[in-house]
Length: 217
Ligand SMILES: Nc1ncnc2c1ncn2[C@@H]1O[C@H](COP(=O)(O)OP(=O)(O)OP(=O)(O)O)[C@@H](O)[C@H]1O
Ligand SMILES: O=P(O)(O)OC[C@H]1O[C@H](OP(=O)(O)OP(=O)(O)O)[C@H](O)[C@@H]1O
Image (cartoon, rainbow, N blue to C red):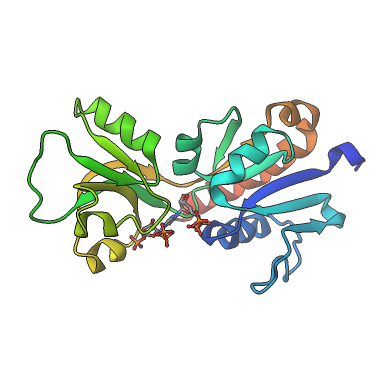
C-alpha cells in the first residue's frame, strides 16, 4: 500500500462511533480493541497496518471535513447529510444508528395560523412545512429541543425520535413522521477518483456485510 492509498475517515464521536467501528470489524478488518477508549481526549486514531486514520469529530461537522478533502471518507447520519447539503458523494447506507425525524408537540396542541417550530434541523423543517403548504417560523436550537413547547418557545418541534422516551418524559407526542434516518458512508469527490482502489475495497466489504445481515433478518 502506498502513501496515496492511506485513507482518512471522519467519524462522529457520539453514539454512531461504536456501531460504525463494530461494522468495520465485522467486515474482517483487524481494528485494535482500544481504538478509542472512552476517557480518551485524543481526536485522531491511526491504524498503520490498515493504512487508516480516523478523525473523531462532531457529527454535524463530518460532511465539512469530507467536502474539504481533509477526510477521504466519513460516516454520518442521513439527517445531518440532508441538513448540511455538502458537495460529497453518498456511497452507501450503512443501516446503523436508525432513528426518524418527526414533528412533535403537546398532546393538546391546536392549530395556529403561523406556528413556531423549534429544531436543530432548520433546513429539513423549512422544506417539510413548505411541501405541506404551511407557513411556519423556524427557531434554530442546538439541543434540548423537547423543552421548547413546554415553556412556550415554540408550538411544535422537529427532532430525532428513536425510542420515544425523550418525548414521553417531556410530555410531548409525535404528530407527523418526516423521514427514516440511518448512517451513511460518504466520500470526498477527488478522493473517490484518486483512491478508488482502497475506497472500492472498503465499499465492497461493507456492502457484503450489510447484505449478509439483511439476509439473516
Ligand atoms: N436517539 C437518537 N438521538 C439522536 N441521534 C440519533 C439517535 N439515534 C440515532 N441517531 C443518529 O445519530 C446521530 C447523532 O450522533 P451522535 O450521537 O454521535 O451525536 P451526538 O452525541 O448527539 O452529538 P452532538 O450532540 O454533538 O450533535 C444523528 O445524526 C442520528 O443520525
Ligand atoms: O427517542 P429517544 O430515544 O428518546 O431519542 C431522541 C432524543 O435523543 C436525541 O437527543 P440527544 O441525546 O442527542 O440530546 P440533544 O439533541 O438534546 O443534544 C434527540 O435529539 C432526542 O432528544
